[in-house]
Image (cartoon, each protein chain N blue to C red):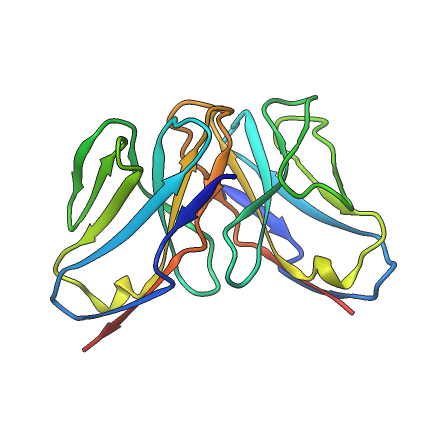
Length: 114
Length: 109
């Protein structure tokens, strides 16, 4: 059972380039999330999707976009990367957007923008 | 504003007991979570509290007091593999998770 798969695991990117982080889950969870994790800060929500076909903005959405064409895939796109987007990005899923809502996380994508 | 406070770092001895505290100020409350995160890895779920009191799960227990905006995670019989960061998160009135910065726990032999 794979759970949540993220790609790439690590990437160095020049500022101004476009980048898409991929996330796929095989648990048939309705809700999916993208977080960034920076040293000394808590996980911060970028975008979320409570069900296929819908998305919402989190705490730090600027510079990022997402799509949810189907239940399994939730890619995160940086249209024009900037150094402040250097971070570790985690994709997560849960059965639904509310309730006990235990999150299952992917292994993370470490992105460096130079 | 919404805020979750945890100690940045704690040190404990193998075999001992450690208590990691978490205080929160959020707009509404719909449950509190604890996650464990080993260095370079993804967070994994440890516990969930929505009512006041103690929830026990093996060597780990989590306590909640909603009136005090306070929770703690208690780890007993510490093992070296418990060296990790422990993340406290509160689900607010909009069912969004607000995360603390995490407590790095160092276990010494």
